[in-house]
Image (cartoon, rainbow, N blue to C red; front, side):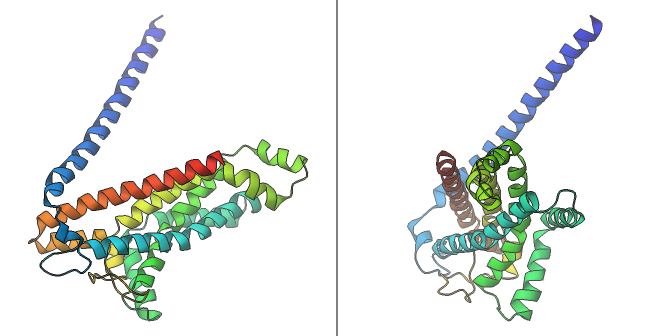
Length: 277
């Protein structure tokens, strides 16, 4: 009887702990969003969305366009590579292989490397060694390497979550390995894979250090991949470090927040459509 009461008391304490942690997380999130909106919305002016940046209008429109371009291109490069690598590790590589374990350890290690290290590597390799200079393509390739482990690991975990009965049923009906993977397993794992894409999108949009060393910080709309440009996060960093345009930096933070929500909403919509299909 005493043990039963102790177990019930422990259950109640754990439930309270979960609720307290959830409440703290929710309050923290609301506080951050509220602080940004309160200090930023009032400073949103039409001049901040002029097509051409000047020292007077401090337009963020070139940064918005650059952010969308870099995000799309980085996902276009890293997405297929990460997804196909995850497919190989789960579906084709022999289980217990030492090569697979080495790849997983390397991916987990790369996922934990600070972005400034990626930025230095991108500057030394893409900007200097390959001669790309401070450009969109150098920033895109650096960010692609940065998010590749995230896409790969989330794809791998999503594929592992699919029961083997799906594969066995497909084989029993006469389908081959390739058809089973792309028609049965991959669509079922699509929500988990899209979750990795969403995480990668958030990291790209909020990145500053890696882009400062590779894409540069020129406040203009890039006309080609070899042009230097700045994203919203770099734009906000530049305004805040100058110390003269804090209000505009808060306004940029509002637009950055809306951009992240917009991109995440699109990703979730695509995931739902794939799942229904």
